[in-house]
Image (cartoon, rainbow, N blue to C red; front, top):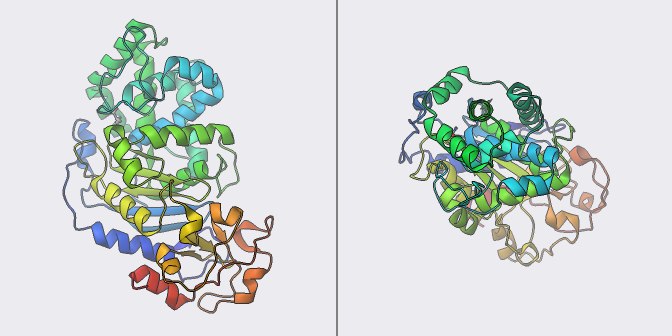
Length: 410
Ligand code: GLN
């Protein structure tokens, strides 16, 4: 458990970090799956590494395990390069060149429309090579510099390339070159093959941590504004478009089952990273390098599923029926996960109406462990500042209640 970073006046009481730690402990023993080795440098990572992080739209970040361990972003760069292409070229031009249909095939498949060479979507390799080529720039250096700048703005810090991974992928990337040649021959790729794959290999080789992925996800959740820096990385409309493609295509040929079981827009990468987003609420970043047969992190998928189920995060879940939303934020910066069990326990709480139901639940709280219940009826300060006046709503759970939720005994 790590104290939240970036929350004003954060208290050591950290139920979300605690929750992440519990989920980590639950799945740390699973050593199934295999590391990617088709990019040889990836197989040098520590297979046991397992980090989880959650970043709220408040900017608070919670971590467990190896959340600060660097790894290359790989395919999780794809939604961000797509965002830049959408911003630069516009929706119509991008959709004319690449689809938004789940391919149902492996990430490196030749999923190209017969005749046109149009890839199925921007989150498989072919589509990503193409969308990166649509990023504005005088040449590959400028295109990559702009992608790196966007990734950095979403992470809230200056990211760098892992040269060893870049070289390793460059030296073994014949399949991606072949995809680019096919698209070039069909006319869908209009820049030179070497330039296109160079930008793509570099964007895949950018180093991030699980905590970075959480903040990047929170930026998408927050309408394109990085909640830690306040910097607008992309327009809200673009963030929504990217989240939509992540929801349908983000997990390769597992995308349908992922949405069915976990219900969150997400993107995975072959180094073992996974970013999931609860729109308007938070981003989750995970890192565990052993992959399943589809190229998704085994523990990342299992941990995401557990968190989603336990806290009713599925996008299709009807919030009002089951009660309070996932997270409550107190002005001291502590955030409280609240699961459906509390509502099921039937304490006569009534759900809050309005924005609090759709997003982080902003409830005034005295100090950790001694809830100021009357404060739930006053205007909130704290990490979100004022702005929205919450309606009187559920009593804030006591520390004992919150810990009981986490232990699963309520
Ligand atoms: N760089 C990797 C590749 O092109 C990205 C694939 C992935 O993360 N799924 O093969």
